[in-house]
Length: 142
Image 1 (cartoon, rainbow, N blue to C red):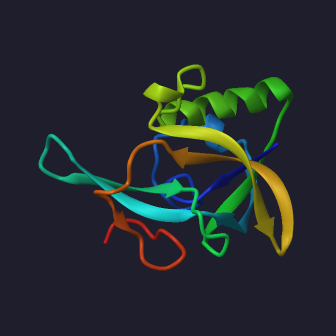
Image 2 (tube, rainbow, N blue to C red; image 1 turned 180 degrees about the horizontal axis):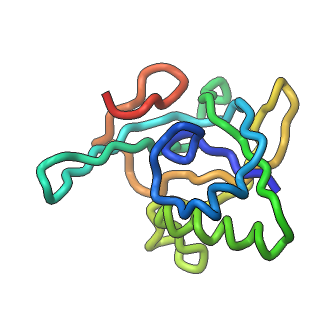
């Protein structure tokens, strides 16, 4: 089972995924994911802000972004636990898409030019007030 990421779940990024779940994401490899990235900035109660990306499927077949794809190690039950943890982290409620900020969907990603089916999180809100991320990858807050 594969999980494709493009933001805070990528290698080297800080996130709230439990370490035991993060340890099951193995063999991170560069991949291409179809879609467009937007940047979300939310104020924090302490005066700072949290910044993270939102991927939306584009109507333009030429719109690809750079991400990272991981193999989820372990038994089917352990892999399901990883997906449940990433669902929680991504505010994805599989049984209630309308309440979900992100939707977990299976989509093709390209790894060295070869297509592989992977789980990916797509943003499930309007992007009209969000700033498009320039270029083809999210690099974190500036």
